[in-house]
Length: 178
Image (tube, rainbow, N blue to C red):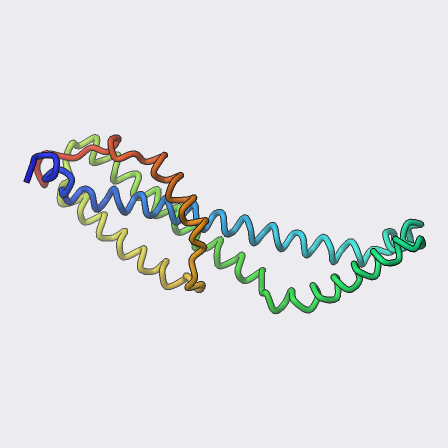
């Protein structure tokens, strides 16, 4: 095994890979949360718009085209009013916010360990123990994730962004295991 290969299999790479995974998950859930909030805002806007008597009484709606558009809006509103509780967006948003918050904390802790490895020029027992604690925290987060399906397109986007931001060449790999 070459020195470069041995260096790649240093246990410190578990920390760096975990760091990247935390960053990827932070991005992934951040984008999901953003999309859920956008959908919720659109639904809220349509419901509020059609409920407003000011907009309902506008002259435009009295034209032939306006009447057809207004009927479509009223139908859309009725459908959205039925779907909103079924979609349970508020609960999904709250869940994603909690998961995102925990991934941000996990990411920050990984970043701290990475910085300490670089500063100490070592991956000692204390840092190894801190890393094990982070692994246990991730177990708690995984239990909170309710949606088993993964948006593959979004995941690929997040992977690419993470790879560009956290380059392997920027991580310090000690010569020995502390």
